[in-house]
Image (cartoon, rainbow, N blue to C red; front, top):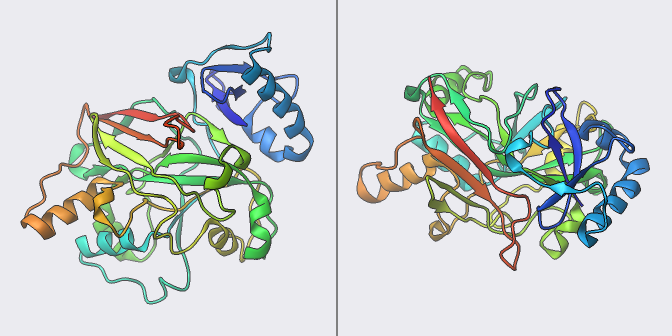
Length: 326
């Protein structure tokens, strides 16, 4: 099943069920009005939403209309909690090397995670505004999960049953500010503006065999201004899985339904797969050529992130965002 949120002028939008091919959609106020309400009542309303989904795919829904991605919010226009890990250690190692920082001593025994801004997310085709280009804006191509209510102390063994939805994520970073914020030892604030998510969130059954219960195994395509930056496989070189991230996040607190958990910028050891952010490309260029040449994001650039199935069909729709600096 594929779900989205339509812009309505209200902060939480209106829940849409979207056809498998992303061409048609239907509002479902008679079942549930918003994505947040859906995830909070998932067990009771999921069967009804699935029936609408079947009708859309069979083209028998009288309420269906053509989907216009430009009119969509993030699947969750806002969330009670957004957590982002860094489980592709190759990315973490390179990013820290670039700013002259040492790796934390326990980075291979405990996932690195921060709590990010979640009171408002960008829509998949909404312009992303940065205060100035000198802050070195960068994108990070990621995959995120959405959980239902997770009790405090849930172990990795039981974590999987709480994953209900999967989305693509663009976790923007202002690289110039990470150099000054992180050495303070108190985490991100200004360096992490709002994030953007794919047009739709999908249930695990939509992913089939490429979801192994802990992680997703497909290339994540990203680029700038139509030029591909990379297509690293999300299942390769993932040191901690989503189950590890859930267990880590709920060690001392419960997680409310609708909590979003990212896994960090996707990167593979094999650099032939390219890069999932500008910073990695620049580090590679510095190492190989002695000078970084790929610029950070600037006014007018367009970032895209997408994932295709084995038949070349878009699973989540594409994040396509113009960049604006003011």
